[in-house]
Image (cartoon, rainbow, N blue to C red):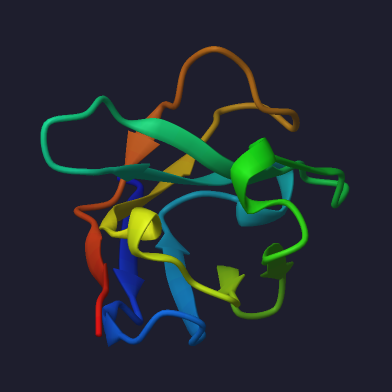
Length: 120
């Protein structure tokens, strides 16, 4: 059974930084594409950043240059380093895992999410 556990969320001032972590268990982590997604109040969940099993990455335009996704195969963990945070980054951030090596149209497994609030 695949489990994804996010951590690292919290309250940060505009311009600040946070690093989110997602620890994965129950699967062969190295062969799965992973991703970070977010859902703000009243909005649909959206993709933030994805990373393939071979470390190819992709970002939504609004976070390019500010966020970095990475993965540690030894720790079965994927990270999202978030810099220069803006109030519009406020959302619940979810970790997702794909069943294949590249991301696709459907996330197969979800974590429970961690709240990021950007406010002064």
